[in-house]
Length: 483
Image (cartoon, rainbow, N blue to C red; front, side, top):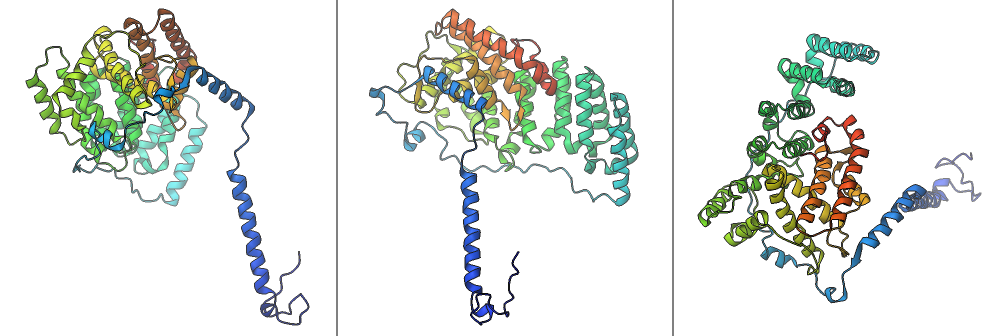
Protein backbone atom coordinates (compact mmCIF):
# COMPACT_ATOMS: atom_id res chain seq x y z
CA UNK A 1 0.00 0.00 0.00
CA UNK A 2 1.39 3.42 -0.98
CA UNK A 3 2.41 5.48 2.06
CA UNK A 4 0.39 8.65 2.57
CA UNK A 5 2.66 11.74 2.53
CA UNK A 6 2.91 13.99 5.58
CA UNK A 7 1.52 17.51 5.41
CA UNK A 8 4.97 19.13 5.32
CA UNK A 9 6.60 16.60 3.00
CA UNK A 10 7.15 17.26 -0.72
CA UNK A 11 4.02 16.67 -2.76
CA UNK A 12 4.24 13.36 -4.65
CA UNK A 13 2.96 15.07 -7.81
CA UNK A 14 6.50 16.51 -8.38
CA UNK A 15 5.55 20.19 -8.17
CA UNK A 16 8.23 20.88 -5.56
CA UNK A 17 5.64 22.32 -3.15
CA UNK A 18 4.78 20.97 0.28
CA UNK A 19 1.90 18.48 0.22
CA UNK A 20 -0.35 20.75 2.33
CA UNK A 21 0.16 23.61 -0.16
CA UNK A 22 -0.45 21.45 -3.20
CA UNK A 23 -2.63 18.31 -3.55
CA UNK A 24 -3.79 17.69 0.05
CA UNK A 25 -7.12 19.51 -0.30
CA UNK A 26 -7.93 17.89 -3.66
CA UNK A 27 -7.06 14.41 -2.37
CA UNK A 28 -9.24 14.96 0.70
CA UNK A 29 -12.16 16.03 -1.51
CA UNK A 30 -11.63 12.99 -3.75
CA UNK A 31 -11.59 10.72 -0.68
CA UNK A 32 -14.83 12.21 0.65
CA UNK A 33 -16.44 11.81 -2.77
CA UNK A 34 -15.31 8.18 -2.89
CA UNK A 35 -16.79 7.51 0.55
CA UNK A 36 -20.09 9.12 -0.48
CA UNK A 37 -20.26 6.93 -3.60
CA UNK A 38 -19.63 3.80 -1.50
CA UNK A 39 -22.36 4.88 0.96
CA UNK A 40 -24.82 5.53 -1.88
CA UNK A 41 -24.06 2.13 -3.36
CA UNK A 42 -24.64 0.45 0.00
CA UNK A 43 -27.93 2.30 0.53
CA UNK A 44 -29.04 1.36 -2.98
CA UNK A 45 -28.31 -2.30 -2.26
CA UNK A 46 -30.25 -2.11 1.03
CA UNK A 47 -33.26 -0.54 -0.70
CA UNK A 48 -33.43 -3.26 -3.32
CA UNK A 49 -35.98 -5.95 -2.47
CA UNK A 50 -34.57 -9.18 -1.14
CA UNK A 51 -34.98 -12.07 -3.54
CA UNK A 52 -38.19 -13.91 -2.69
CA UNK A 53 -37.67 -17.61 -1.87
CA UNK A 54 -39.47 -19.85 -4.39
CA UNK A 55 -41.76 -21.43 -1.77
CA UNK A 56 -42.81 -18.02 -0.41
CA UNK A 57 -43.43 -16.75 -3.93
CA UNK A 58 -45.56 -19.81 -4.67
CA UNK A 59 -47.63 -19.21 -1.50
CA UNK A 60 -48.02 -15.50 -2.25
CA UNK A 61 -49.21 -16.09 -5.81
CA UNK A 62 -51.65 -18.76 -4.62
CA UNK A 63 -53.00 -16.33 -2.02
CA UNK A 64 -53.39 -13.55 -4.60
CA UNK A 65 -55.26 -15.90 -6.96
CA UNK A 66 -57.58 -16.91 -4.15
CA UNK A 67 -58.21 -13.27 -3.23
CA UNK A 68 -59.07 -12.43 -6.86
CA UNK A 69 -61.56 -15.28 -6.89
CA UNK A 70 -63.20 -14.18 -3.64
CA UNK A 71 -63.25 -10.37 -3.96
CA UNK A 72 -64.06 -7.84 -6.67
CA UNK A 73 -63.83 -4.12 -7.30
CA UNK A 74 -66.87 -2.07 -6.38
CA UNK A 75 -69.24 -1.74 -9.33
CA UNK A 76 -69.25 1.47 -11.44
CA UNK A 77 -72.41 2.83 -9.86
CA UNK A 78 -70.68 2.65 -6.47
CA UNK A 79 -67.31 4.12 -7.47
CA UNK A 80 -68.38 7.69 -6.87
CA UNK A 81 -69.39 6.98 -3.30
CA UNK A 82 -66.47 7.81 -1.05
CA UNK A 83 -65.79 6.93 2.53
CA UNK A 84 -67.14 9.37 5.08
CA UNK A 85 -65.20 12.56 5.62
CA UNK A 86 -63.68 13.47 8.96
CA UNK A 87 -66.57 15.85 9.67
CA UNK A 88 -69.16 13.15 8.88
CA UNK A 89 -67.42 10.67 11.13
CA UNK A 90 -67.48 13.20 13.96
CA UNK A 91 -71.20 13.68 13.39
CA UNK A 92 -71.64 9.90 13.64
CA UNK A 93 -70.11 9.97 17.08
CA UNK A 94 -66.36 9.53 16.72
CA UNK A 95 -64.45 10.58 19.83
CA UNK A 96 -62.45 13.33 18.13
CA UNK A 97 -63.37 15.92 20.76
CA UNK A 98 -63.08 13.70 23.84
CA UNK A 99 -62.19 15.60 27.06
CA UNK A 100 -58.89 15.21 28.82
CA UNK A 101 -59.01 12.86 31.80
CA UNK A 102 -56.82 12.73 34.87
CA UNK A 103 -55.62 9.22 35.61
CA UNK A 104 -53.51 7.90 38.51
CA UNK A 105 -49.95 6.77 37.93
CA UNK A 106 -49.09 3.08 38.10
CA UNK A 107 -46.97 1.89 41.00
CA UNK A 108 -43.57 0.70 39.83
CA UNK A 109 -41.65 -2.36 41.01
CA UNK A 110 -38.32 -1.74 42.74
CA UNK A 111 -35.69 -3.09 40.38
CA UNK A 112 -32.59 -0.94 41.02
CA UNK A 113 -30.53 -3.69 42.61
CA UNK A 114 -26.82 -3.10 43.28
CA UNK A 115 -24.49 -4.80 40.85
CA UNK A 116 -23.32 -8.26 41.84
CA UNK A 117 -19.95 -8.37 43.57
CA UNK A 118 -17.08 -10.44 42.20
CA UNK A 119 -17.83 -13.08 44.82
CA UNK A 120 -21.52 -13.07 43.86
CA UNK A 121 -20.58 -13.50 40.20
CA UNK A 122 -18.56 -16.59 41.10
CA UNK A 123 -21.50 -18.02 43.08
CA UNK A 124 -23.90 -17.34 40.20
CA UNK A 125 -21.59 -18.88 37.58
CA UNK A 126 -21.02 -21.96 39.73
CA UNK A 127 -24.79 -22.29 40.27
CA UNK A 128 -25.57 -22.08 36.54
CA UNK A 129 -22.87 -24.61 35.67
CA UNK A 130 -24.46 -27.04 38.12
CA UNK A 131 -28.00 -26.29 36.89
CA UNK A 132 -27.07 -26.92 33.25
CA UNK A 133 -25.83 -30.39 34.18
CA UNK A 134 -29.12 -31.41 35.83
CA UNK A 135 -31.74 -33.43 33.97
CA UNK A 136 -34.74 -34.19 36.19
CA UNK A 137 -37.41 -31.68 37.20
CA UNK A 138 -37.00 -32.58 40.85
CA UNK A 139 -33.25 -31.93 40.81
CA UNK A 140 -33.69 -28.60 39.01
CA UNK A 141 -36.46 -27.50 41.36
CA UNK A 142 -34.39 -28.43 44.44
CA UNK A 143 -31.39 -26.57 43.00
CA UNK A 144 -33.48 -23.41 42.53
CA UNK A 145 -35.04 -23.69 46.01
CA UNK A 146 -31.63 -24.13 47.64
CA UNK A 147 -30.32 -21.01 45.91
CA UNK A 148 -33.36 -18.96 46.99
CA UNK A 149 -32.92 -20.11 50.57
CA UNK A 150 -29.23 -19.20 50.73
CA UNK A 151 -28.86 -16.32 48.25
CA UNK A 152 -32.28 -14.69 47.86
CA UNK A 153 -30.69 -11.22 47.87
CA UNK A 154 -29.00 -11.82 44.51
CA UNK A 155 -31.72 -14.01 42.97
CA UNK A 156 -33.65 -11.16 41.31
CA UNK A 157 -30.84 -9.69 39.16
CA UNK A 158 -29.24 -13.04 38.22
CA UNK A 159 -31.63 -14.21 35.47
CA UNK A 160 -33.04 -16.96 37.69
CA UNK A 161 -36.39 -16.59 35.85
CA UNK A 162 -34.70 -18.24 32.86
CA UNK A 163 -34.17 -21.34 34.95
CA UNK A 164 -37.78 -21.27 36.15
CA UNK A 165 -38.94 -20.88 32.55
CA UNK A 166 -36.99 -24.01 31.62
CA UNK A 167 -38.46 -25.79 34.63
CA UNK A 168 -42.02 -24.96 33.54
CA UNK A 169 -41.38 -26.27 30.04
CA UNK A 170 -40.11 -29.59 31.38
CA UNK A 171 -42.92 -29.98 33.93
CA UNK A 172 -45.46 -29.17 31.22
CA UNK A 173 -43.91 -31.65 28.79
CA UNK A 174 -43.99 -34.38 31.44
CA UNK A 175 -47.61 -33.63 32.43
CA UNK A 176 -46.68 -32.56 35.97
CA UNK A 177 -47.94 -28.99 36.04
CA UNK A 178 -49.50 -29.52 39.47
CA UNK A 179 -45.98 -29.84 40.92
CA UNK A 180 -44.80 -26.72 39.08
CA UNK A 181 -47.76 -24.70 40.33
CA UNK A 182 -47.07 -25.86 43.90
CA UNK A 183 -43.49 -24.65 43.43
CA UNK A 184 -44.65 -21.25 42.16
CA UNK A 185 -47.05 -20.82 45.07
CA UNK A 186 -44.19 -21.53 47.49
CA UNK A 187 -41.95 -18.95 45.79
CA UNK A 188 -44.80 -16.43 45.71
CA UNK A 189 -45.33 -16.74 49.45
CA UNK A 190 -41.74 -17.05 50.68
CA UNK A 191 -39.75 -14.87 48.27
CA UNK A 192 -42.00 -11.93 47.30
CA UNK A 193 -39.15 -9.56 46.38
CA UNK A 194 -37.85 -12.03 43.83
CA UNK A 195 -41.28 -13.19 42.65
CA UNK A 196 -42.65 -9.74 41.91
CA UNK A 197 -39.91 -8.97 39.37
CA UNK A 198 -41.58 -11.31 36.86
CA UNK A 199 -44.92 -11.89 38.57
CA UNK A 200 -46.96 -11.73 35.36
CA UNK A 201 -45.21 -14.77 33.88
CA UNK A 202 -45.68 -16.78 37.07
CA UNK A 203 -49.20 -15.59 37.90
CA UNK A 204 -50.48 -16.30 34.38
CA UNK A 205 -49.39 -19.91 34.86
CA UNK A 206 -51.08 -20.14 38.27
CA UNK A 207 -54.32 -18.50 37.09
CA UNK A 208 -54.60 -20.51 33.88
CA UNK A 209 -53.97 -23.72 35.86
CA UNK A 210 -56.73 -22.83 38.34
CA UNK A 211 -59.24 -22.08 35.57
CA UNK A 212 -58.39 -25.13 33.46
CA UNK A 213 -58.73 -27.39 36.51
CA UNK A 214 -62.08 -25.98 37.63
CA UNK A 215 -60.78 -23.88 40.52
CA UNK A 216 -62.04 -20.49 39.31
CA UNK A 217 -63.06 -19.40 42.80
CA UNK A 218 -59.37 -19.21 43.78
CA UNK A 219 -58.38 -16.89 40.91
CA UNK A 220 -59.18 -13.44 42.45
CA UNK A 221 -56.53 -13.83 45.18
CA UNK A 222 -53.86 -14.08 42.47
CA UNK A 223 -54.83 -10.83 40.76
CA UNK A 224 -53.37 -8.65 43.54
CA UNK A 225 -50.01 -7.98 41.87
CA UNK A 226 -51.67 -7.18 38.53
CA UNK A 227 -53.86 -4.64 40.31
CA UNK A 228 -50.87 -3.10 42.08
CA UNK A 229 -48.29 -3.03 39.26
CA UNK A 230 -50.61 -2.58 36.30
CA UNK A 231 -48.25 -1.60 33.48
CA UNK A 232 -45.48 -4.13 34.06
CA UNK A 233 -45.21 -5.83 30.63
CA UNK A 234 -48.83 -5.11 29.65
CA UNK A 235 -48.89 -7.85 26.99
CA UNK A 236 -49.24 -10.35 29.83
CA UNK A 237 -52.12 -8.30 31.27
CA UNK A 238 -54.11 -8.28 28.03
CA UNK A 239 -53.39 -11.94 27.45
CA UNK A 240 -54.76 -12.72 30.92
CA UNK A 241 -57.90 -10.64 30.31
CA UNK A 242 -58.46 -12.41 26.99
CA UNK A 243 -58.00 -15.77 28.74
CA UNK A 244 -60.52 -14.93 31.48
CA UNK A 245 -63.05 -13.70 28.93
CA UNK A 246 -62.75 -16.77 26.69
CA UNK A 247 -63.00 -19.06 29.75
CA UNK A 248 -66.50 -18.03 30.89
CA UNK A 249 -65.06 -16.12 33.89
CA UNK A 250 -67.35 -13.08 33.71
CA UNK A 251 -67.67 -12.76 37.50
CA UNK A 252 -63.87 -12.52 37.76
CA UNK A 253 -62.93 -10.43 34.76
CA UNK A 254 -65.49 -7.63 35.21
CA UNK A 255 -64.39 -6.51 38.72
CA UNK A 256 -60.77 -6.97 37.64
CA UNK A 257 -61.21 -4.61 34.67
CA UNK A 258 -63.07 -2.07 36.79
CA UNK A 259 -60.24 -2.05 39.32
CA UNK A 260 -57.45 -1.42 36.83
CA UNK A 261 -58.93 0.53 33.90
CA UNK A 262 -57.98 4.02 35.10
CA UNK A 263 -54.35 2.96 35.55
CA UNK A 264 -54.31 1.29 32.12
CA UNK A 265 -55.77 4.32 30.35
CA UNK A 266 -53.33 6.65 32.11
CA UNK A 267 -50.15 4.68 31.50
CA UNK A 268 -47.86 5.86 28.67
CA UNK A 269 -46.40 2.34 28.59
CA UNK A 270 -49.63 0.62 27.50
CA UNK A 271 -50.62 0.74 23.82
CA UNK A 272 -53.95 -1.15 23.92
CA UNK A 273 -55.66 0.96 26.56
CA UNK A 274 -58.71 1.52 24.34
CA UNK A 275 -59.40 -2.23 24.52
CA UNK A 276 -59.87 -1.95 28.28
CA UNK A 277 -62.22 0.98 27.74
CA UNK A 278 -64.38 -1.08 25.37
CA UNK A 279 -64.45 -4.05 27.76
CA UNK A 280 -65.39 -1.75 30.63
CA UNK A 281 -68.22 -0.13 28.69
CA UNK A 282 -69.72 -3.48 27.74
CA UNK A 283 -69.55 -4.68 31.35
CA UNK A 284 -71.92 -1.83 32.27
CA UNK A 285 -74.28 -2.70 29.40
CA UNK A 286 -74.73 -6.34 30.47
CA UNK A 287 -77.43 -5.80 33.18
CA UNK A 288 -79.58 -4.01 30.60
CA UNK A 289 -79.45 -6.77 27.98
CA UNK A 290 -83.08 -7.84 28.41
CA UNK A 291 -86.21 -7.62 26.31
CA UNK A 292 -88.18 -5.37 28.67
CA UNK A 293 -85.48 -2.75 29.30
CA UNK A 294 -87.27 0.55 29.94
CA UNK A 295 -86.27 4.09 29.01
CA UNK A 296 -85.68 4.83 32.71
CA UNK A 297 -83.23 1.94 32.89
CA UNK A 298 -81.42 3.12 29.75
CA UNK A 299 -81.18 6.58 31.30
CA UNK A 300 -79.61 4.98 34.36
CA UNK A 301 -77.09 3.20 32.10
CA UNK A 302 -76.27 6.49 30.45
CA UNK A 303 -75.66 8.13 33.84
CA UNK A 304 -73.42 5.25 34.96
CA UNK A 305 -71.28 5.56 31.85
CA UNK A 306 -71.05 9.33 32.19
CA UNK A 307 -69.40 8.84 35.58
CA UNK A 308 -66.62 6.74 34.05
CA UNK A 309 -63.32 8.37 33.11
CA UNK A 310 -63.33 6.89 29.62
CA UNK A 311 -63.75 8.38 26.13
CA UNK A 312 -67.26 7.55 24.92
CA UNK A 313 -68.94 8.09 21.57
CA UNK A 314 -71.51 10.83 21.99
CA UNK A 315 -74.04 8.60 20.20
CA UNK A 316 -73.96 6.36 23.26
CA UNK A 317 -75.92 8.96 25.21
CA UNK A 318 -78.77 8.90 22.68
CA UNK A 319 -81.57 6.59 23.86
CA UNK A 320 -82.49 5.69 20.28
CA UNK A 321 -78.91 4.58 19.68
CA UNK A 322 -79.01 2.39 22.78
CA UNK A 323 -82.37 0.88 21.83
CA UNK A 324 -81.09 0.06 18.33
CA UNK A 325 -78.06 -1.78 19.66
CA UNK A 326 -80.01 -3.67 22.29
CA UNK A 327 -82.37 -4.74 19.53
CA UNK A 328 -79.46 -5.93 17.38
CA UNK A 329 -78.18 -8.07 20.23
CA UNK A 330 -81.48 -9.51 21.45
CA UNK A 331 -83.74 -9.93 18.41
CA UNK A 332 -83.79 -12.58 15.68
CA UNK A 333 -82.84 -11.61 12.15
CA UNK A 334 -82.97 -13.48 8.85
CA UNK A 335 -80.84 -13.49 5.69
CA UNK A 336 -78.05 -11.05 6.39
CA UNK A 337 -76.37 -9.64 3.28
CA UNK A 338 -74.17 -6.76 2.15
CA UNK A 339 -75.68 -6.09 -1.28
CA UNK A 340 -76.60 -2.48 -0.45
CA UNK A 341 -73.15 -1.64 1.03
CA UNK A 342 -71.22 0.64 -1.31
CA UNK A 343 -67.95 1.21 0.64
CA UNK A 344 -65.65 -0.77 2.87
CA UNK A 345 -66.85 1.33 5.77
CA UNK A 346 -70.47 0.36 5.15
CA UNK A 347 -69.51 -3.31 4.82
CA UNK A 348 -67.59 -3.11 8.08
CA UNK A 349 -70.59 -1.50 9.82
CA UNK A 350 -72.90 -4.23 8.51
CA UNK A 351 -70.52 -6.90 9.76
CA UNK A 352 -70.51 -5.19 13.16
CA UNK A 353 -74.33 -5.26 13.32
CA UNK A 354 -74.30 -8.96 12.38
CA UNK A 355 -71.69 -9.75 15.02
CA UNK A 356 -73.74 -8.01 17.71
CA UNK A 357 -76.66 -10.27 16.86
CA UNK A 358 -74.28 -13.25 16.83
CA UNK A 359 -73.28 -12.34 20.39
CA UNK A 360 -76.90 -12.66 21.51
CA UNK A 361 -77.06 -16.05 19.78
CA UNK A 362 -74.00 -17.26 21.71
CA UNK A 363 -75.44 -16.15 25.03
CA UNK A 364 -78.93 -17.57 24.54
CA UNK A 365 -78.22 -20.64 22.40
CA UNK A 366 -74.78 -21.71 23.67
CA UNK A 367 -75.22 -20.54 27.27
CA UNK A 368 -72.01 -18.50 27.23
CA UNK A 369 -71.76 -15.66 29.69
CA UNK A 370 -71.97 -12.24 28.09
CA UNK A 371 -68.25 -11.44 28.36
CA UNK A 372 -67.31 -14.70 26.61
CA UNK A 373 -69.91 -14.10 23.90
CA UNK A 374 -68.52 -10.55 23.57
CA UNK A 375 -64.98 -11.90 23.16
CA UNK A 376 -66.03 -14.39 20.46
CA UNK A 377 -68.02 -11.68 18.69
CA UNK A 378 -64.98 -9.40 18.63
CA UNK A 379 -62.73 -12.12 17.23
CA UNK A 380 -65.19 -12.93 14.43
CA UNK A 381 -65.55 -9.24 13.61
CA UNK A 382 -61.76 -8.90 13.38
CA UNK A 383 -61.73 -11.77 10.91
CA UNK A 384 -64.50 -10.27 8.75
CA UNK A 385 -63.17 -6.71 8.84
CA UNK A 386 -59.48 -7.38 8.32
CA UNK A 387 -59.82 -10.13 5.74
CA UNK A 388 -61.67 -7.81 3.32
CA UNK A 389 -59.11 -6.03 1.07
CA UNK A 390 -59.34 -2.24 1.02
CA UNK A 391 -61.24 -0.99 -2.01
CA UNK A 392 -62.84 -4.36 -2.76
CA UNK A 393 -66.02 -6.15 -1.77
CA UNK A 394 -66.66 -9.86 -1.22
CA UNK A 395 -68.30 -11.64 -4.14
CA UNK A 396 -70.48 -13.37 -1.56
CA UNK A 397 -71.52 -11.85 1.79
CA UNK A 398 -69.39 -14.09 4.00
CA UNK A 399 -66.00 -15.27 2.78
CA UNK A 400 -64.34 -18.19 4.53
CA UNK A 401 -61.62 -20.52 3.28
CA UNK A 402 -59.20 -22.65 5.25
CA UNK A 403 -56.27 -20.57 3.98
CA UNK A 404 -57.95 -17.31 4.93
CA UNK A 405 -58.84 -18.47 8.44
CA UNK A 406 -55.24 -19.54 9.05
CA UNK A 407 -53.86 -16.29 7.63
CA UNK A 408 -56.12 -14.17 9.85
CA UNK A 409 -55.07 -16.24 12.86
CA UNK A 410 -51.43 -15.58 12.00
CA UNK A 411 -52.03 -11.84 11.58
CA UNK A 412 -54.53 -11.13 14.38
CA UNK A 413 -53.57 -13.69 17.03
CA UNK A 414 -49.79 -13.31 17.14
CA UNK A 415 -47.43 -10.80 18.72
CA UNK A 416 -43.92 -10.80 17.31
CA UNK A 417 -43.02 -14.52 17.25
CA UNK A 418 -45.54 -15.66 19.88
CA UNK A 419 -49.11 -16.87 19.41
CA UNK A 420 -51.77 -15.69 21.85
CA UNK A 421 -53.61 -18.90 22.74
CA UNK A 422 -56.79 -17.10 23.92
CA UNK A 423 -57.08 -15.17 20.66
CA UNK A 424 -56.13 -18.19 18.51
CA UNK A 425 -58.75 -20.40 20.12
CA UNK A 426 -61.25 -17.54 20.40
CA UNK A 427 -61.16 -16.84 16.68
CA UNK A 428 -61.33 -20.50 15.68
CA UNK A 429 -64.21 -21.32 18.03
CA UNK A 430 -65.93 -18.07 17.12
CA UNK A 431 -65.86 -18.86 13.40
CA UNK A 432 -67.10 -22.40 14.07
CA UNK A 433 -70.15 -21.08 15.96
CA UNK A 434 -70.60 -18.19 13.52
CA UNK A 435 -71.09 -20.70 10.68
CA UNK A 436 -73.93 -22.28 12.67
CA UNK A 437 -75.41 -18.87 13.36
CA UNK A 438 -75.30 -17.89 9.67
CA UNK A 439 -77.08 -21.09 8.71
CA UNK A 440 -79.71 -20.48 11.40
CA UNK A 441 -80.38 -17.03 9.97
CA UNK A 442 -80.59 -18.44 6.41
CA UNK A 443 -77.52 -16.40 5.42
CA UNK A 444 -75.47 -19.36 4.13
CA UNK A 445 -76.30 -22.87 2.94
CA UNK A 446 -75.94 -26.03 4.99
CA UNK A 447 -73.13 -27.22 2.70
CA UNK A 448 -71.17 -24.00 3.25
CA UNK A 449 -71.69 -24.24 7.01
CA UNK A 450 -70.35 -27.79 6.96
CA UNK A 451 -67.30 -26.68 4.94
CA UNK A 452 -66.47 -23.86 7.34
CA UNK A 453 -66.80 -26.05 10.41
CA UNK A 454 -64.77 -28.83 8.80
CA UNK A 455 -61.96 -26.35 8.06
CA UNK A 456 -62.03 -25.17 11.67
CA UNK A 457 -61.76 -28.76 12.93
CA UNK A 458 -58.87 -29.46 10.53
CA UNK A 459 -57.00 -26.35 11.66
CA UNK A 460 -57.52 -27.28 15.30
CA UNK A 461 -56.26 -30.82 14.75
CA UNK A 462 -53.20 -29.55 12.86
CA UNK A 463 -52.22 -26.63 15.10
CA UNK A 464 -53.44 -27.36 18.62
CA UNK A 465 -50.90 -30.14 19.37
CA UNK A 466 -48.10 -27.74 18.46
CA UNK A 467 -49.57 -24.83 20.42
CA UNK A 468 -50.25 -26.76 23.63
CA UNK A 469 -46.59 -27.83 23.79
CA UNK A 470 -45.46 -24.22 24.12
CA UNK A 471 -48.49 -22.44 25.58
CA UNK A 472 -50.11 -23.88 28.71
CA UNK A 473 -53.07 -21.48 28.43
CA UNK A 474 -54.09 -23.33 25.26
CA UNK A 475 -55.31 -26.11 27.55
CA UNK A 476 -58.61 -24.26 27.91
CA UNK A 477 -59.31 -25.41 24.34
CA UNK A 478 -58.61 -29.10 25.00
CA UNK A 479 -61.87 -29.98 23.28
CA UNK A 480 -63.18 -28.47 20.06
CA UNK A 481 -65.52 -26.73 19.81
CA UNK A 482 -64.93 -25.33 23.27
CA UNK A 483 -68.51 -25.30 24.60
